[in-house]
Image (tube, rainbow, N blue to C red; front, side, top):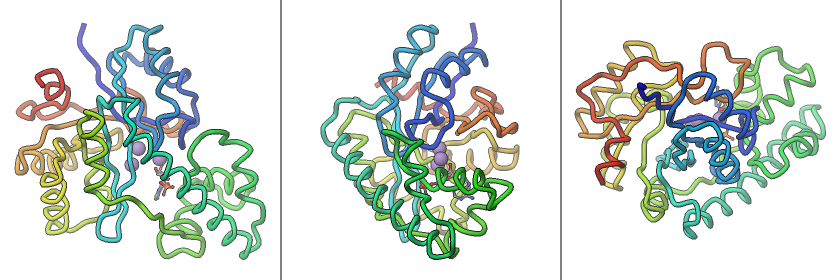
Length: 279
Ligand code: AMP
Ligand code: MN
Ligand code: MN
Ligand code: MN
């Protein structure tokens, strides 16, 4: 049987709309054989996903997508094959939960000031133990009829420079990579083309990421086209990084992104999973 790897996706533990079990069951139906659930800044969904993977005969890879500060930007670092009991990583997630809750309250206050009250109270009823993200506010705005598409939430209210934008106080790139290493994991720079960086800035980011000990870069995501894959592959070769792939699936409503449905990775690259199994 051919292996199908999906090493980046989200559940209700952060801003996904499927529970970890529903997500794993969907992955199984799509033919995924190796799955990493990588929720934003939390390990809450991992135990449930692991059990569901066992039930479905899928190889479970413990994962996370951590928010990291880099030169006033927030970049995302996926950690794969992490020890879920690692104290340093767990402490980091706890600090991020507090920070994200404070940020969510500030976003809510800003929304109230422009005439949209009770946003935090409303999303809190839905999120339970999960991490509040801007995506939760986007879904709230959609449900309340303030927007007709999720993207409009970022374009009008929540994106950088918009009236309800609140910057997060993220741990540094170095810190985040150190947490992942401390937990025995592999640090992967997520979706390198989504930060709107120039070539020079991308080179700087990848230099600092590799110096910090980052080992891989996402080359194929659920939305990547041919040119984007070629560009990311060039960065992988140039910095001698292993290559990862993951759909970044959040919810079934996005018909363009599906678990396990990924374009082929250029064959000369070293897949990130070989890095782990050859350790
Ligand atoms: P946060 O990490 O709280 O800043 O929330 C960011 C999340 O919002 C991302 O992980 C995406 O899932 C979602 N998102 C969707 N569209 C956008 C967009 N245009 N800009 C930023 N985030 C977006
Ligand atoms: Mn997200
Ligand atoms: Mn991301
Ligand atoms: Mn993601």
